[in-house]
Each structure stands twice: as structure tokens, then as C-alpha cells.
Image (cartoon, rainbow, N blue to C red):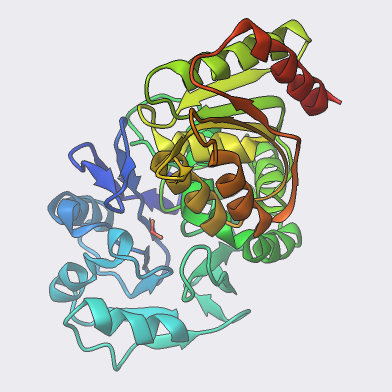
Length: 381
Ligand code: FEO
């Protein structure tokens, strides 16, 4: 139960291998859905069809012998909308309420007659009796058609993908870590659009946030709003340095770990390090946004940069990576060229300060320490 009148009818998914076909979800994912019980009854979104049967059971249990009046579709991505047909089949008189943008995307995915849907726009209201819902457009958080919904009676914001996280609801885990990984990988590109929504939210008295993934938020609302403010402005969340490396024979790894050791010895408040070839690249991307200073260490490969580092830089670029200080460690035996290639990609990003790079030739040597130490000083300056 969310409030006396708002019931949770979502489901956990521990069977999905990759969310969106790309993100590992060690603790699963929740597809949240809610029902608002009033003189009229509204269902807030559905769930992935993978879990449709369980969802319909939850819905029927919540409704008892009543029938729902409205199905509000805030976001049409199939992890939320692919059980619409089951709801419409069970309750043919239900009125679908959604945005104009959704009416254009829904038929692309679902073979249903959407001609009778009720279209709502910014500021429109829907009265259920005691509960009055106000619709808020939230384009690109994280698709263009998204709306959020504010219930001013219970002071609840239904926030679509906003404030969501990876992880099913039957697993206890830290909100920040998996919410940050979700945010930067799924919505990271759209900082300005998230800012637009935060400005609208600032004018509302919100006591509960009901996202489409992750836990219902109450006591921690102040904290999650602060985190979203930092993340959506590409601000620095944690002081310290993140080192992302790729290594072919262990030598660039040696240089990366030596750099971590030097930074720690010089009093760097926190040093995080990731082997991009072996650790979750979505977690590494999250850390690149979390810290203000980043070291990228990679070997030269085919006269450019090692492709795993090249992919990582591409991912940063398409997520609108910006406002960071970058140190580069390249490795190359006969013709080091990784730094030049990395700098070319970084040059296209906004407000990236690239420091004087370090070149390692083959194995890490004692004589390399001075250059690494100088890079550490520049990072900590
Ligand atoms: Fe959870 Fe954008 O779908």
C-alpha cells in the first residue's frame, strides 16, 4: 500500500538476463504499477508482458469486485506498456488516458485500436472523486511521449522512469548506487530535460514519489532530489579520481594501479579503479560521471586506441559527457598513438580539460614514476 487509496500492483523480474538488452541486473528489476481507488479507479501504467500474468492477478486482487475506469499510460516503452492489451481485454470499457506523443508510438508496438484514447497535455486534470490528478509533460525522461502525474490529494508524484533504479523490490540494497547506474546509462544524455522536470516538481508539495522502477520514495525525497540536481547538471558528486583502464599484457594495468597508489599517497580523498574489459562498463560509465577527475589508461592498438577504451569513450560521448578533468596514460611500444586518438574523441565533448598525458613504453619502469607523479599533482591541483 502506498497510501490508503493507492495500491502497489507491480512485479519483480529476476529472470531477465539484460535490461534493454544491454545492462546487467544482478538483483533483477521491478516493473511498478499502481491503482488509485476512488469513486473512479485509475491504473497507473502496466508492466512488461513477461510478467503480465502476475500483474493481472495483482490488479484483480486490488480491485476486488470493482472495475477500473482509467488506464493512464505515462510511458509507452514495452517494459511498462506491453500488458495494456491484457488490461483492455479484461476490461473492454476502460478509458486509456495518455499523451499525444504516446498515441503516435503505441500503434508501432501494440496491435490494438487506440482511436478512442483520451489525450492529455501539460496541466490537464482528471478527477477521480476525492483524488484529482494533474498531468506533467516530461519529454525525454526518458522517451518523448512521457508524462508524469501528480495526485494533489495524497501529494504523490507518479514519476515514470524518473527516480527509478535497477533492482527488484524484494532485494535490500543501497538506492544511490543502482539509481546512479540507471540514471546515467538510461537518461544521462538528457540532463536539460531532467532539469525542466525538476523545476516543475519544485512547485509541488511531494510527500511520495512512485517511480516505474525501484522503491517508492518517502523519507529520502530530499536526498534523491539533490542527487538528481547534481546528476542532471553534470556536477561532481564525489571528490576524488576515477581510473578506467584497459590492459593487454598487464603493463597498462600496472601503470593504472601505480597511479592509484600515487594518488592515495598524495592524499586524494577517494580513488576508484575499473578494468573496462572485465568489469561492468555501465558501472564504469556511472563512475566517470560521479567523479570530477578521471584517468583513462589504454594501450595503442592498430595505430589508434585499444577498442575497448574506444567504445567506452563513445559511450561517454553519446551520454553527453562534460565538465571533467581528464588525465591520460597511453602505452605503446614502437609507435604510441592511443593518447592522440583519445584526445580527438574528448575534444568533441563539452568543457573537458585534458591534462598533459603520460606515455608508457611497454612495461612500467621505475623511470615512469616521475611522469605519473606529475600527472597526479595536476589532477589534485
Ligand atoms: Fe522503464 Fe523507459 O522504460
